[in-house]
Amino acid sequence: MFAVIKTGGRQYRVVPDDVLEIGKIAGDVGTIVQLGEVLVLGGDTPTLGTPTVAGASVAAEVLDHKRGPKVIAFKKRRRKNSRRKRGYRDELSVIRVTEILTDGAKPSVGPRPKKAKAATAEGDAA
Image 1: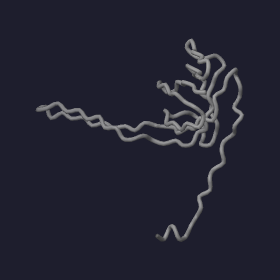
Image 2: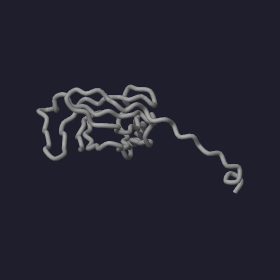
Image 3: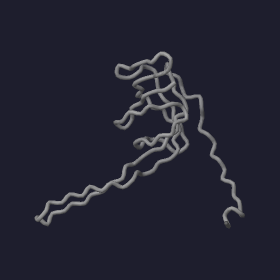
């Protein structure tokens, strides 16, 4: 089963366990958020929304908040000694889709536990 969701002015086709970088959303790292704007529910019998599918949502775990790559907007007017340099970085959230919910259901899956890093003294020395 897949879903097409809309968030941050963009549309994404998602299936469970997908990892996405989307525009920044409210939620701390490790929490489960619900994305409510589901445009299409796919599977054996696809359901198209008008404009959204009623009662459908996507549950996702927030993995990280970060900033995107630097984008430089440089404008120059030749022979006028006029230059303008302006840059920005997008605020992003990295999420993992946990499940696709229908009929107004609540998320059943909680946040996944953090994996512990194995410390090896021999691997660090090499």
